Amino acid sequence: MEEYENMTVAELKELLREASLPVSGKKSELIARLVESNDSSEEVVEEVEEVEDVEIHEDDDDIFDDDDDEEFFDEEWDQIHTARQKPVLDDETKANLSIRAAQMKKQPKFRRQEWYRYYRLARTGWRKPKGMQSKQRLNMKYRTPMVRVGYGKIAAVRGLHPSGFEDILVYQPSDLDGLNPERQAIRIGAGVGNRKRANIHDRADDLGLRVLNRRKIDRKGDLR
Image 1 (cartoon, rainbow, N blue to C red):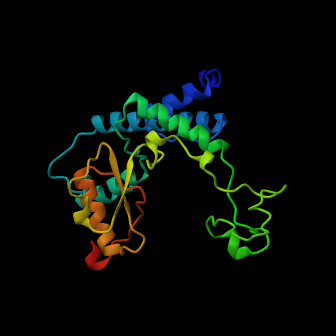
Image 2 (image 1 turned 120 degrees about the horizontal axis):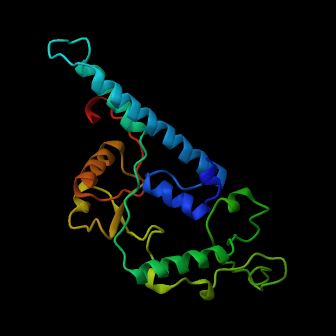
């Protein structure tokens, strides 16, 4: 615990990445996550040592049951955090992505004209004001900024996902053929049903493709 207190946030995050743990949160949360991980690993080592001391008999069916083993491992593996797949990028692309992230932090939030007055306008995307006497179009004081060419980001990584993947929209499993899992990731269309979505998930796992909008599907009946 004390050694973690003397470490910087960057060093703590590096330890978390090596342990395949989340790196978000404050320093106290990072330290608590590391301590909890160390405690759990020590418990696993103790359990392994106890299991090694037990004499296993092939005829003893009460010790190991196949159904119990499957349920145990399913519950344990569901709780293990798996790191998300990362693209294979060169140094120049990584630098451009970091530049774009810095540009995004400085960009204002573009609001529709009179978004504060009408709730339906606050929920919609940007629309250019076209009224002749529009205060926003005339760029008067205290009005939200408009979308302009000067807010454009670095062109080298335009259209890439924040992770660095090229975002590919798919609607059926056959759309995954020919994609590069090292540079491309898929996003399933919003109108795709659970049956076809489950098939796309399985096909993407076989090809090693990352699904950017993966969601949990309760596979019941013929969806299994």
